[in-house]
Amino acid sequence: MGMMNRVGLLVGTALLSVVLAAVAVACGGGGDEGTVSPSPGGTVSPSPGATGTPSAVEEQLKRMVLQLSDLPAGFSTEEGTFSTNEDVASAAADPQAELATLTEWGRISGHNAIFSPDPNATNQAGVFIVESTVSLYDNDTGAAASFADAVDTARTTDWQATITQASGLKVEELPSLDVADEMLWFRISGTAPIGEAGTEQAFVEDMALLRVGRGRGSVAMASAGGDAANQLMESLIRIQAANIEAGLR
Image 1: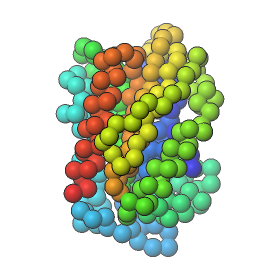
Image 2: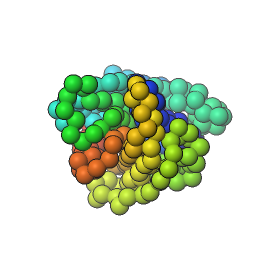
Image 3: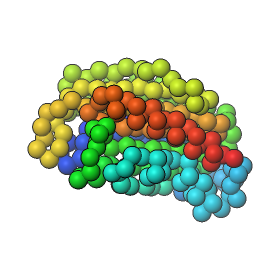
Image 4: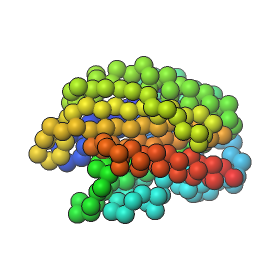
């Protein structure tokens, strides 16, 4: 399974756009996961708590990611997308195998939202970008299998080869919070050219993978690091877990 097709640095006008694709996306997080679509050889089973219609499931997913109101003042919504299992699979090295795995897991759909600080706003936490993802499965077992695959990918990925613009890269796992059935929080830090001028500066990329029941989600945040950023990341993880739980009711 592809995992972080996006934890790479977007140097120039952006900054770190996390390769959050497969661990968060194809593996169940959300990013490139989207609109409800029949699985090959069958139809999508409506998830409990949703009517089974695409619009209802999409609305359910929207409630489960971070909301703009969950972020500090001075942020705006950058992007929000849905995609089908077929869309997710098409980005994999072996689309047929990927689609078969997503079908086996009972993945229904997913959604992501991206937030960035307004250019003129005071950004005390030094945050560059935040991404929140979520996806739904037919049952807890499928979501757990997706989560396990995502964790394995996160731990085995060669991050230095993935984030080629970065130097002095350090990868570490942080203690999990007691907010989900399963969780992995890891951090990638180093230096890279960031901003329009491409000035070399320190960055911290936090990624939290979560499973709450049959929901899989993730929170990714790129920042300059520091206590304020750490506190914000922890707060966003807690909110994301609570949003997933509320969306499953």
